[in-house]
Length: 263
Image (tube, rainbow, N blue to C red; front, side):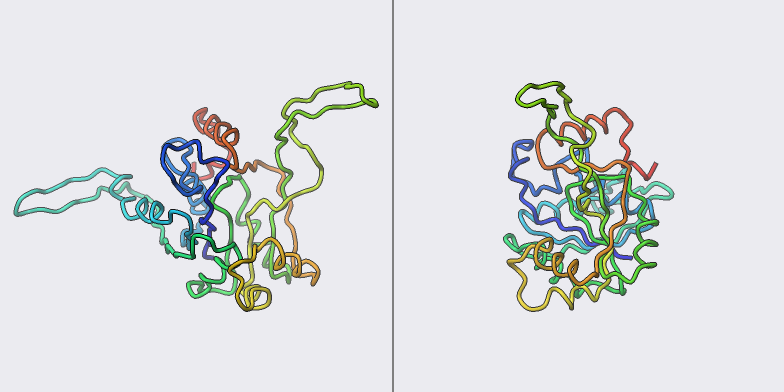
């Protein structure tokens, strides 16, 4: 399956982690943008053909991939009459195919997906966002989707608690629980999805450039009984704020990043 990644977000709540304007998927974890971490996770399961829906500062993402091989590997540079560059790729290095599609700086997610339909090859494809990491089993997710007759399969996760929770007896605080593991038992869409291509024709008809995929299209599909959810009880973490960025970088620097499936 191909993997479509929504990469158009500006990330205003996390803009202060960089000294220059960059799209949210280019915010780094360690020495690589979070986008690389997400793609590496998919590639570890054999999904290595990507379609990136670019928006805000899409030029930065294009620049990254145009120079990717040169920056990631050793080089031999020949000068003068024998000028040229030899890239020394490691044995077993993965080969990704990356389509970089300009889908508009202000286009909403439904419009971005519809614009890249022309690059889709099969009946099903994977879809995710460029701002969250997980250790979700992608093979199991694909199998779950194909065994159902749904047009859309979501990964259901319990979001990590962002704030300390208070246990109360009337107005009296009886317990303070800082950074709880779970703030609710109700799952949310974790962003790792598998979609039947018919979903686009059925729910993205007409001009949807100003529509969020997660609003009317998903809501109507749910009412029609065309969405299923596979629960994920492992690691999942978005990168929406500086606090998230610090947490993910701390995990990466510790050498114990749960999403590092490629190792």
